[in-house]
Image (cartoon, rainbow over all chains, first blue to last red; front, side, top):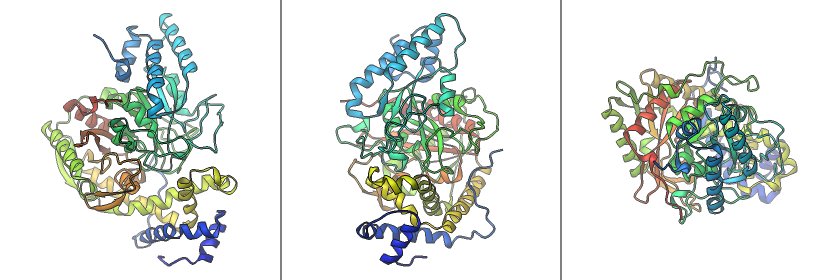
Length: 60
Length: 472
């Protein structure tokens, strides 16, 4: 999941999310996007099979 | 005996008002005058409710004089982070986008504070939409940390104005909100007490969100006892907040016995103490010894899964924040602080699968903390690994190496936003530069009683929380 995003992939992902970035803004954001993707890739390595997603503590 | 009303505790103010030793009109006047004199440089407030607060104080005084029953906070002024809806008073989340937004109703916790007799002094400065831990805001200018105003140190955020106002005597107490540490970080950097209750303990209804599943609401005060009193007033089930708990609300104040004999304290070294600067590490270790000296049983415990918190927190907070802001980003992107806009837009690159994996990872972290607390009553760690950085500082050096300031500030607090456990930050020393050092005590879910008892006992053993900044 730590692939390098090319300009077209960045642009497509931004459009899908409704974020209107110019090519210059996309390029400026590339290091932050790649750092974020690298961080998120660590989640893929976790033993999460069978773990139920938690959105709040046991409240009752 | 002469009492400095600007630095009197909430408990003392409430007691003096109830006994008619001081009028709420006088208490509010003292605070408004202090705000007028000091807030031009400190910038804690976005909106000061001078007329409304004065009128409410006169009403409170009249009620007392006529013998009507008074609530536990009768006549005590309190300030609110600018993301709590307040009927008839602008609530903007520190943004341009919501400038002029005036809610018709109070947030649940604001209503509860008013029902307890509190008087709203004003709305406090914050990071735009609560998205950042430094306390910076491009629209309003950054509030100044009162401990080093000349050097322009960060107050911490996102509840920056709450930290500054309480530390500088511009409010006896405030409400903050905490998504990754936004109560405990400014509490640590400004030398006050900040309580993040268990997720679900306090209603979020009427509080503008950053990330719904991570947002917590809580008090910021100068003493633990004051936080206990405020928590009692604001906690409890609220049908307007689907995540709020139906568990009964204890009398937190009555639980503050000062006794920690036999209390089992787990000192968090790996990741927590190990990342702190030498001064912070020494202060927290000294605090652990103080608790031990009072009869607590201290051991060390490790939470290796907190290494996954950064990724899990990022996946969840950035996705939820983007969801809330999507329509404004499409139509009013230019009105955001550029830094905040960039953080929000980066959420576009998180997949749905990663959001869910983030929530799954939270469960791993929560279970590990639960396991540690099965053998202990509280966990002890630094609240922040460093003291207040300079406003223009972007990189720093921690105990385990270089770090960006933003990541450093949030590193030790957000594990307990991920897990939902209650955590209370209190001052535990000062650096050689005279800047406050903060530690946090973490407890079992919905066991704020034990967290507050331990933190209050620590404040009875020490005087860090009684020190006041010398303002220029």
